[in-house]
Amino acid sequence: MKLFVCAAALFLGSVLSASYLDDAGQAFLRGKNDKGMKLLEKGCEKGEAASCQKIAEIYFNGKYNIQKDDEKAKFFLGKGCELNDAENCYGISGIYFNEKNYEQSNKFLEKACEQKHPAACSTLALAIIKGLGTEINDERAVSLMKQVCEYKDKDACKILGMIYLYGMVGVIKDEKIAFKYYDKACKLNDFESCSAKSQYELSQMKIDRTDYAKEAQTNRAACDKGDAAGCAALGRLHWLGKGVRQDYNKAKELLEFAISKDNISAYYYLAGLYSDSQSGLINLEKAKEYYEKACDEDIMNACSQCGRIYFHGHGVKRDAKIAKEYLGKACDMGDANSCDLYNEMNKHEGIAEFYGY
Image (tube, rainbow, N blue to C red; front, side, top):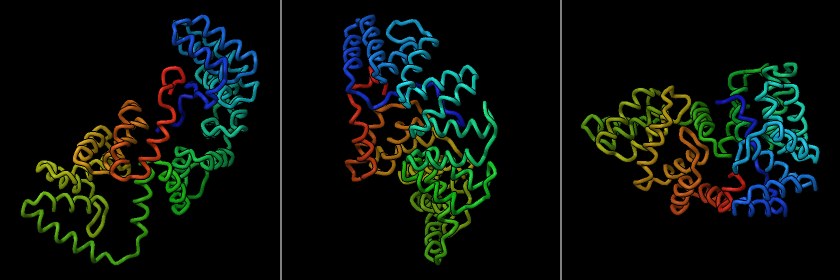
């Protein structure tokens, strides 16, 4: 997990109705780059923060045949930040961060965080933890992370889960609090947190495991006879530690055997094992491959996982088109969460080129 996001990535806000910005977009689409730049500059002068941000992005990335110029990017981001626009403040903080001018970076992170910008607050928290441009202050860093988690930022919630699970940065280890934050991150579609949450739930279960033991016994008998379904089911039990000892390597062995017999459930279970941060067998490339195979055979949850893999870029390059294909398939099979994410992505369709989605 990267402790610092690339803060220089300029996030485009939701202000999509600003007239200068829209007119500039049309000019760029017609190849009239000079006109587009003049419109954006005028928009920024007139107080349109989104125009400041866009022209800064163009200078920062050297888009539309405009020469890359970090100083001009900083100038326009600074103008946007003066308009109390959090995205511009966050953008300029990223440039200063890349220049290793951490004090200046933190100054703009503070301003963006005051306006409840989640990424700015979490980046500032990590700067405070590492003492970059500021004194180390674990208490304030954790407080900022909690603030960001309340903004429904899954990464901040997951980091808090880790902090409490392992007793990091001056925090007393507390598995119950860790579970609370992992649960929040899981509900925000962070699959690693879902795995951590599941492991905690299993460790806390106070139920009669006789049924699991019987299930394991039945599946072991079937597997001993070479039955692929029995081996797949037994492998899943070893992965989760239900009715048998938890043994990730044994689970992998059984699931690989079932896959050699082309058992579809085994593909899905082994994908989950390869995605489980607790297993020590993380292999996101294989997880993607096996989730895709299971999805091809209409396993709904596998399609949902494929969509999220491509949406978040877990082990692959982010690809909104492919993500939508998988999420749409899972939605059609009845997965409500996939439907929600698919519909959210539709809101941004058709504006990827200019608005940077």
